[in-house]
Amino acid sequence: MKTSIAKALFQSHSYIEYRKLISDLLRQQQSTSKTPSEELTHYSSLNDTRMQRLDKTMVVPETIISKLTSLKETYIWLVISEGWCGDAAQLLPIFNKMALASDGIIDLRIVLRDENEELMQLFLTNKTKAIPKLIVIHKETSGALAHWGPRPKDAADLITDYKKTHGTIDEAAKTALQLWYLQDKGRTTQLEVLDMMLDLDNPEV
Image 1 (cartoon, rainbow, N blue to C red):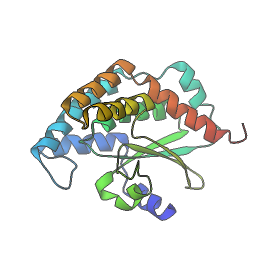
Image 2 (tube, rainbow, N blue to C red):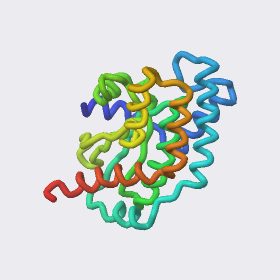
Image 3 (cartoon, rainbow, N blue to C red):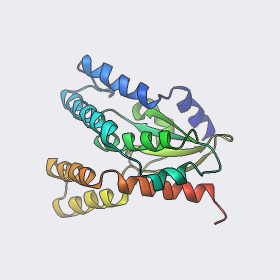
Image 4 (cartoon, rainbow, N blue to C red):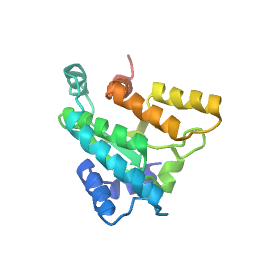
């Protein structure tokens, strides 16, 4: 696993670099996909707009900031993503704001799923390459300690229940999911990720 992580980190992007990569590709009417399509470029464009909005509006509460800055160890959050992924567009701005709020304790790095097949295979969700996937790495040992994703539990339950009822994930399901994210304002994600970090930082508690 360490080899896969080392390879991924070597070619990883900062949040600013990732945002620039998506924007540069969109100017060429392209997406991060290895198999370009108008549909994926369209989703990437929507996601770029969403991320711009969330970069401006996403807030990390002081209660969460104080706990992030009290973590005893230092970590890397390695996120597997793609520009066309709707969930990634909703969640990456949250990860970024939390990492920035940690005062150097957390370093956010991002890699593309389709360029990191070996890494992705280690973090499948129900045997699928669902993204985004946040991998928590101990900065000193480079060991992967835990992972989170591709969605907060309530959002995942929404999609699971929809699929059980309708048999498929269609545009209505995607709209319902985006509405959930809009109403939640990042609260659930922040709490779930924070709880994971506190558990890792205090293994004996």
